[in-house]
Image 1 (cartoon, rainbow, N blue to C red):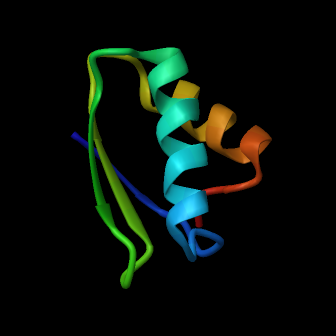
Image 2: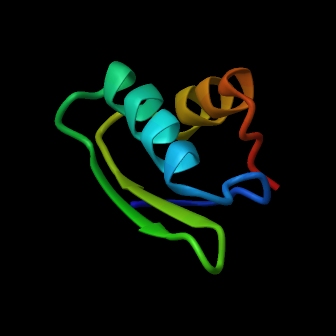
Length: 63
């Protein structure tokens, strides 16, 4: 499981955009959000760097 600190994730729209981005890479990925702490946890067989690149491109660069 990967954990990402996403300082720019502030609302439900952010969660929806991030979900869409992650699932485009891995449709079977399991996501867990902690919006207050601005943390995303992803359970996936794909490499962490793929998610870092995709999240950054979407506008949610991990800290």
